[in-house]
Image (tube, rainbow, N blue to C red; front, side):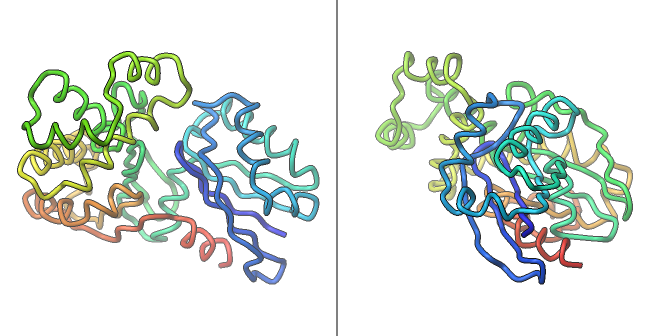
Length: 279
């Protein structure tokens, strides 16, 4: 049996295939980012899924694509975690940028991730290139869920948020400063916590205030990431991620302003990854 996993900080999608390429089951677990979570948390998150645990002895190969797997140390961590559970499996760990690229194209393109975090890569048809070395959610990640969550919290506490928007925001979340600081500075996975606030932005994106925040975030992403590549004006630019999926109209509008060529927008790369591996 082959397992293919696409993992972010928030969630992980799994697909199991038999040796003939037929789907055996699909599964979901919480995010398995080895740069954010400790080993024991990663193991616990996998073991909570009965489909994975009941088939663990029959898994022969795992292709794991994950956020936080761009360097050797976190790759080693997640490989050890997987090996401790799937003892008979040969395991390949790759970063989430590869999942994004191979799920949408085999031709030269720029491929972006907009989800809990954000990323942008250039694929020349053979090799994936990145000009920007990400410093993570606290400094970078423009137009991501955690970026928009941060902006919303700043505007709320700086009294810059329109009253009607602020009232709804307050009804939907616990905005106690002590609660927020505890989640940001003492609990695990603060980037996912910040991204949770972006759901309200998406749900109310038609108002002028929300549109301006979304536009500003997308502009920063385009100027700081996409336009770094010389071929950005000629190549198709694909997007992967839940936030890109929900902000499709806004991405289309701002791409027209920058004269950029929009390619595919896919919410999840897992189905494209299955097709890629079956080839």
